[in-house]
Length: 225
Image (cartoon, rainbow, N blue to C red; front, side):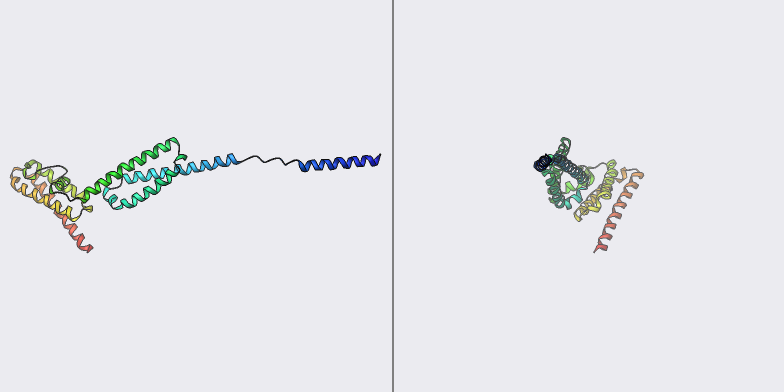
């Protein structure tokens, strides 16, 4: 009997061990969904950051002075292409608001770029005397027909333009400004008796400032040679 019980116990132990070997271990929880979600979140955050950088860049370029833009346009165009290409490839990761902002910024840049192209083409065309005078005085005026009371303001406009724009002037601009001053002086000599002393002194002061700025430019050119 004891021998029988020992055999039975050994058989049960062997069967239990075999069953344990056949039973697969409990599977670990799947993390694929969580991993994908985390990756998507990181991608979205990165694209949103790229969009902010792109928007800041576009805003800065639209505020840039036209003269400096003209010189840097090839580099600006290359930078725009680089940034927009990167965003185009990941645009599906942007939110609805982000996509709207991206489209708006691209349109703003396109309008600005078209305007720069137009300005560049115009800049390459030689100005007529009348166009130069209009640019320097801010309006169309026939100086030879100007009234005495209009002369002080015309002198002021010429000098004011000179103050603000002379750093970017070419020799052509300086020559055009000098020609306008000559025409103003000729008309002033015809009408000076019609002006009160105060206005004559004001014109004298503006004439002097023009010549001073002109001489300063000549000195700078000599020093740069």
